[in-house]
Amino acid sequence: MADVTTDRRHPRHQLDGVIHSPIRFSIVAALASVDEAEFSTVRDAVEISDSVLSRQVSALDEAGYVKVKKGYVGKRPRTWLALTAAGRRAYASHLAALRALAPDL
Amino acid sequence: MIELLDILESSFYVGFMTDLRTSRPFDLSTGADRRIAAVVSAVNGIVMATYFFAVRLADDADSSLARALVTFVYLALFGVVAEVQRRLASTVPRGSQRLTYIGFGLLFVVGMVFTIAFNIAERDGEVLSIWWYAAAAIATACPSLIAALIIMRRR
Image (tube, rainbow over the protein chains, first blue to last red):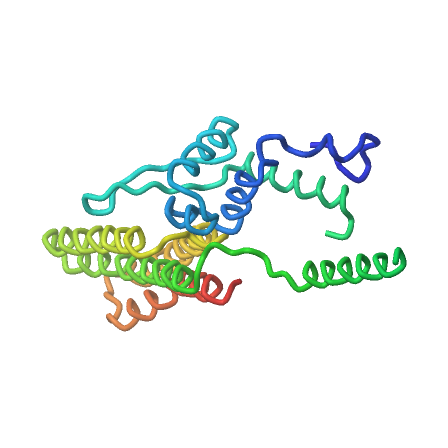
């Protein structure tokens, strides 16, 4: 991964297109604060509907940034979400690019 | 008028910067999640350490039934702890899984050291007092208990 501070190109090139959308950025930021989180906890924290979270998680899953684990608690299905190592790297790189763009952050 | 607008704009900017400085990082996990993760780490450590030496006591007594019973209780407790965490926790706090694994790894190292020491001590057929086993179990559980404390206090 190129270092944002030494790269001669404008920092905007380091912004991650998958993470950059406000909702996906919020989901990734929420997941970055934990090892794993239950689907409904992320949904409530980011204040979005099940279907929106499901769609955005699919996009993040396709990019290899989020791992989805499905299971049961008793008879009720539960979904757990976690950032992958690639997801954490992409998030850190995206934050570094934001800080390079806006040093006040 | 333009100057007034400039002042207003710059005061808004100062306010925004203060917001940035005073903003706290967003954390999805709650205090309850941290407590659950800590208790899981501690209980797993205690169960594993107890199993280490309970099996040895069963072997000393030459009872395969006692060994099977101890193993069954151990596996059942492990399952119960995992299920409790799945049911009660909505998140696994950041770093708690790694700390639990490190505590568990160190627990095995300490347990193996005690096992080797006990093997040497019992070489001549002498059987150690149960208090030695109890003390070893407590010492063996320590890495997981320390991991639990760190998980609990971490923010």
